Structures are given as structure tokens and as C-alpha cells.
Picture 1 (cartoon, rainbow, N blue to C red):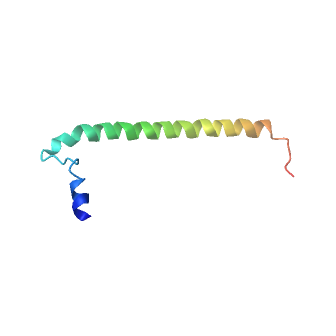
Picture 2: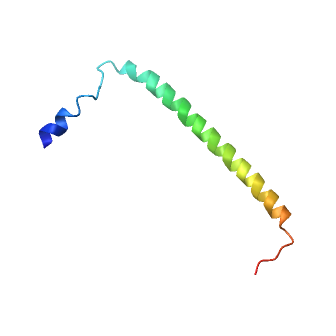
Picture 3: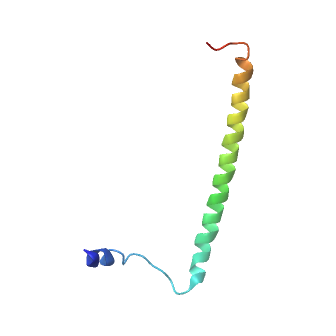
Length: 63
């Protein structure tokens, strides 16, 4: 069982020259920055919509 696990991991590639990681790090950094920007934008829009709903239903009392 262990032998088949080791044999199935031959597709992994760890280069000796670590400069090959640079494009991956750059693209991951760009992707993570885009994720943070989109998250903050969605949070801002959500807050704005919550304020609109609160303003619209301000006079209604809950049971």
C-alpha cells in the first residue's frame, strides 16, 4: 500500500532551481490581492444595502 502511494506521487515536481517558483508566487500574490479587494467591495455593498433596508423599514415594529 505504501509502495503504491509513493508511486502515485511521481507527478509532483520540486525543481532544484528555486527561481521557477517566482512566477507562481507572483500569480498567487495577484490572486490573493484580488480576493481581498473583491471581499472588501462585497462587504461595502452589503453594508450599503443593509442601511437602505433599515431606512426603508425603520417605522415597522417587530412582534
